[in-house]
Amino acid sequence: MQYRKNEKNGDEISALGFGAMRLPTKNGRIDKEKAKEQIYYAIDHGVNFIDTAFPYHGGASESFLGEILQNEYRERVLLCTKMPSWSIKKYEDMEKYLETQLDKLQTDHIDYYLIHSLGKGSFERLKELGVLEFLEKMKIEGKIHNIGFSFHDNSDAFKGIVDAYPWDACLIQYNYLDEKTQAGTDGVKYAHSQGIAVFIMEPLKGGIL
Image (cartoon, rainbow, N blue to C red; front, side, top):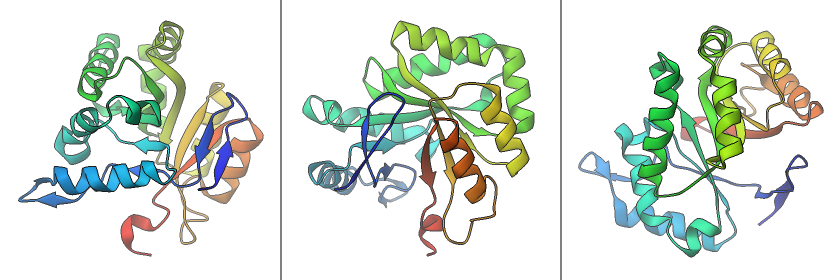
């Protein structure tokens, strides 16, 4: 496995991560044995970045990862999940969701905690609710280690969000069909120039490529 160093914190992160949005299913539910086999295989062969989110698999993805990432396997990975931005109506919601996610993941901290599906409008709304202050507080308390966002909007909105806060990481949609879509190639370069770790979602466009 090849690794990329996060210059901001020294994390050595595998070039390939494991996304838990599309785990194998059986009868409409996560096929736990098959999914566990896949994830353990990936970790045993050097993958150390696992990405999930509150709504994946109808809310079951985080709970499943909490079941299987115990002891040595939890210690061997950097776990990334996301605040469900659309469900945040007040400051207290942020606390509620983070505590729920920590419980579901059966962990005392989340390595990379991202604001999910951020765009210009949602960012402005969440800022007014105090999201950045909340995330900083949780980072000080050790419940999250890195603050970031996943992004779905245009390139101008991306640059504005990048400039608004000293983020630790961002997650963007990027592949050879999406070089000019959303953040795009220019966004990748800009975030990197600002010292932000860039993670990629949809490298195979959801299995189409």
